[in-house]
Image 1 (cartoon, rainbow, N blue to C red):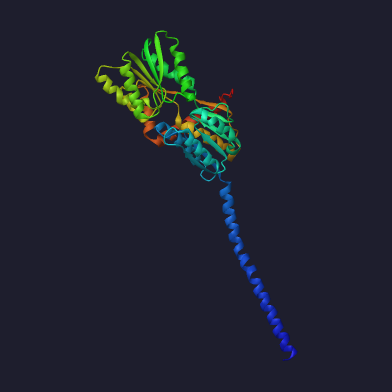
Image 2 (cartoon, helix red, strand yellow):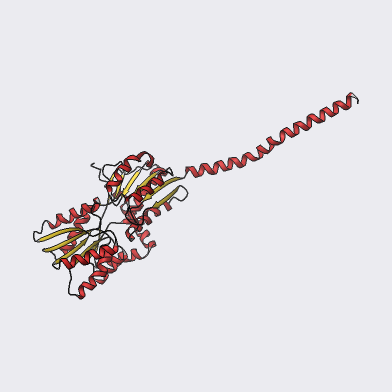
Length: 364
């Protein structure tokens, strides 16, 4: 074989090897854009802030309305945040705490919760302050913890409003029984305190407070048995949401037996509003549960997404006193979620700056 042929074979062999060597690099180059695209999607997902909200229970319409408010705040930023609102079906602090810990595993930018009852939550909130980043509490404060803000009723004033409704109904003497659905809860203790402050001005009123339980059937049984044991009762006050449905069912039966007394309860759930309309509840005090869900989420999201300042302290919401005189407008709001959301949108447009300006510093 001539040298020229050998040279040609060598050249062809080298060229072939070079071509083979280049092919994986070309394939890798073609694959690179896809990898970059996947990375961009992952980065975008990681940049979407996550917020959690843990409820104390979902046993009543009141609790559901807190959830609706929280989710409404998140829905205003669909491209910027993800949110999860969860909680046990019934009042169960260990289960709620476990859910809180589960949400912490998602690396939240902030956490909100209803810490009722307070005692089990105190060590938990202190332990996980760093992981939660921002802690907002609603419907019950958590003294002794690093919470940023509390959103809820001025509980003492709430109790005073309930007692004043009894006095306004003409009661200035006799036995008044207060039902507390969960006496260890700080908000209910403060409501009881407020009610007693009002009744202290009426020395002929005798006040007794009992555990009326946080479950509808046992709450009904409590009041049925209590009235039987105390036929001289002149007024019954419920510090929780359960008394509305209870009075709605119990008072018609008692009225047939010739028994009647003034009834005042907490929260503006549909059963309670119907009972006011039918004359079985004299007054109900509302505390804007929608805002207790909406505002904690709103402030956290506004801070993380827009850099807005966070409130620090108690964000106290005004009580709403409902009687037969102003019932109709409240029922319209309760019957239609779109009407309710529009009502609260207008309410916040008029009152949000005032709410921000009147935050009460924590004293603990």
